[in-house]
Length: 621
Image (spheres, rainbow, N blue to C red):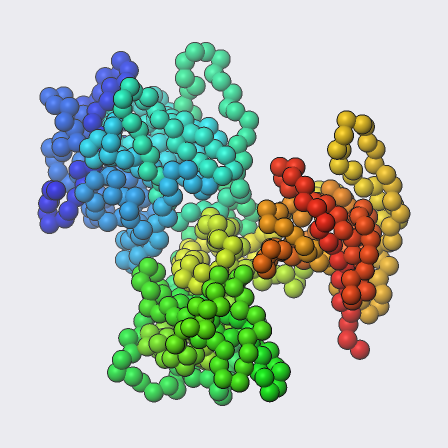
């Protein structure tokens, strides 16, 4: 380990590899420029021990230390500093970058998340990601890091120092073009050199501030060059992956957490959702405690069950089961994480909701932690000046019996586009997937939910918010369905044999034929076996009815079977779509029409005896 000016620094680069006849450029030569960042040669003409060659010592950019000249880690730090205004902490070897989880904003010194994805992850690298190689084989003994400057379906382009040290061709913007494999479930960086008995093990990639992208699928292969030579390198300046309309920024955004508190308080539902309750503890009037260690900002999430008061028979669907609080300034620091005993005296549990949060009944009943004790533990860290971050955090505070209004509620900061008003409020999964490029597990985990909510709040400091989320489903480019003459509908028939099939016209009621007292009509799809997804249900609805749902809710499983609701633009559209379904017709105990049918998944596997119920909700007189 080297100590330079009191800072532990990285001596982290691969040994020089000469792969062609191009001579390495002398030390300190500018090899090329990418996104305004210069890439330098670290070639030592008298020695190939370049990983230990830094004749002029350290590099500083606008007063910020970036590393030793001209190591691979130095470029990685300088690139993030120039393009994003952040740096990661000093490391001894390039491989250690893979273990980092934060970067520092050089302006306000805030710690921001660094997202690390292993080789084979379903989340690909993006422009600005750092690809990290292990310390074995070609990149022995320190490993290697390179900056991604272009991502395609079959290759990535990277900029790097202390490897080949050759000057880039004119108009080039990268050091190497490395082959990759990209499927919907896995992204892998392939070997570049393919040397005998020399491994090129990629640990993965680290991404700061991941930008949303539509789910990428491998497209057609890139056209080969007409000659045997490699295709010419075209100059592209910071060609980042496009983001959907509405998420792009029209200018720099520099919010503070205080700004987000104010934005939350200005939401039209704030007064109602965060109203005081005389039976709760208010952080504004609670007695000070000598044990209190109030934090500046925390993130919170709770898991709940449903209980019934034995005397009044009143249900409480927000009964506390688990509470997790993390430090907003260090999201890996868990301040509170408690399983809460249920049910309290005089109540019985109606539903433990284990299928939602994964906490088993015996775990809940065996806990010795009461709701009062859980609340006291939370209030050790939450005081009147603490900012509490959460998604629909008013529900979490209510389950704890705490009145607190200094909050950032991410469900108030974002809304969905192009859906009915009742579906405008996004779920946390909308934020994690579309903003953070994180796929959440099916079962809720209050620690993970709290941490990702904090990440979403941090993301909002520098990105547009409001009506920027979308419903991730198919759309048609046909005329507005409300103007469609639906007296006859053609049902697309799935071809299952070699016999040619033709579409059969089916008479259906007009979409305007709706009762005066009808409030809403949708489908309830149940008896769904595991292995089928809401996207399969959606595709089935479109293929079989030619009517596009406005939303297909996530499938919720209870024991063996799952269920979900399918919503349409109007009750008439829902009735029209149901009428055109082909299946065995019956009624359920509530006299609602039911059709039993088969649904195929994306791979063509058939799932049988799934029931679709037409549910009509009427206005109360």
